[in-house]
Length: 71
Image (cartoon, rainbow, N blue to C red; front, top):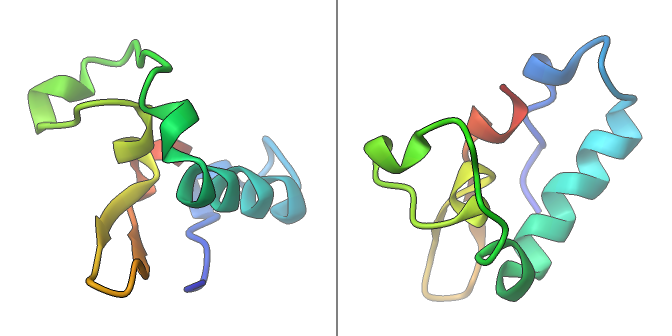
């Protein structure tokens, strides 16, 4: 997995918790896709909560993180 964007979480959660949240989002989109987001990010094109953490996936399922999940 690529480095986790923890900057937005500094002071709110430990880096280990932030890492675990992002890894869970990447490994379990079937869960997070059904978790509603309440920040109006659908206006940014997000379809579910997974999109707040995972920006893209390539053909090999490698992720690029979205820092939005930390805001």
